[in-house]
Length: 251
Image (cartoon, rainbow, N blue to C red; front, side, top):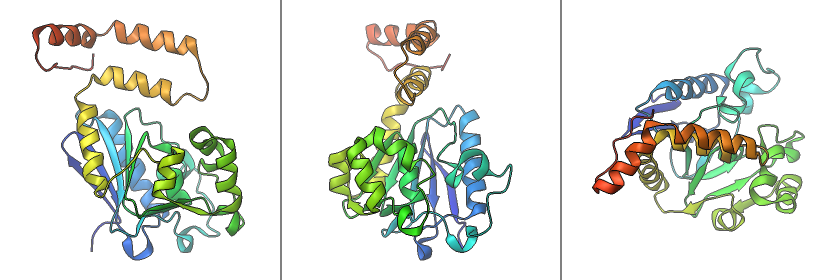
């Protein structure tokens, strides 16, 4: 029997595969711990330049929480879900790019995982939705907070208040999905390698600014100053002038 979350290195990317296709890749409390631990390790491993998350099979990326595991259980104090939200993922402070390879439906917590990702590649047959209100709960894993910043307040209200699912092409039009691809994991790994060709210190600074809740020009100035003081800036200029690939050190 395979592990419910497979963790493996592919090139410079750490790939997390939610591997419970028989229950549409629903997430348990134990799986939250595995995912959180993998992201913790990725944060400190300089060889890992990005994280790709996907699901097993073609039917579902993730159907949210396994209700048989979490209903009535509460959230244990100090657990991965307590610290980092759904899946040990949606509030994890990882300062490396997160890329979703959406192989099938992403629903509830699964859709909220997409909102935590920086890039989302989806198969055209995938559907995305936030049906929490139909189950008597709130999209508390980031859906109610983040969705409006991605698709705008009116579209967010539609999706959150009706609970309806949208297909991947419509999600692409609204900005919820970055691009469509018939092999989302292959494409996600291509993007991961393209990102890895760039300066890690500049990538980290860019992510901090992209993920900020509000436009902050003081923070922007600090990030620019930090990057301009790095060795990678000099290396980038030298590589350009010498017409060779840069040798980044992340310093």
